[in-house]
Length: 310
Image (cartoon, rainbow, N blue to C red; front, side, top):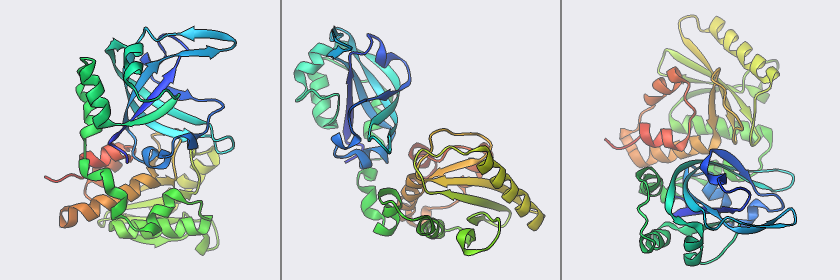
């Protein structure tokens, strides 16, 4: 249940709320109000609709239902670890030709955030005379085999996404995941005494990447985190004189991305393992050379583009 669902987001906060990129918070709501949250969040980007509603805000009844709903790209979903408050990070793709009121009359229910099967929504849009933009349609139709991608991957690696593991167990399974992907891995971390990275992975014979595990959601490297990783890189350069050295942060998810290092979310690495299984002997680690060179953020869209059947 991922690419075949469309996320419906509603608000009356302002008459142009869905027309600019932002992170939409839903105060006094919990992410668990969306039963399929984990699956959806791990499969972003997703198709969405931004709908204007009638809502009581700060003691006033606000009604923007005459405003046209907007086709959205849901880039990221996260929640506050303490309160459970959900956030949806989105880009607008295109405003529709139809008022939110007409769409709401066709939808089965009115919640501030919900999902609907893509096939059901497409029928509604056809009734309304809508022609969804191609970019939005691609979010629904892209990579259909990935609908069941989690079924391909063992529980041990899925638990990196779904469970709150201890730090040592997290490091062990990250090392195992890199090995399963085909890297030559040397694990350090808690297994050695002194300042060392959590491990090194080797790409071919000329590239070494030192990685640092962060067993947390929405991780943002501090100055100390960056200092340590830079020191690990320098140590590796002294150790491997004729090899290119790069640094990677591996975390459950990241809140912001910096270009100084590589950022690998766990969900993306596990998704890449699915790709290896699905592609069989056509799978190769070669695309990592370009990803390293461009310091690209490893997400599912990038993986689908770089690892696909030729």
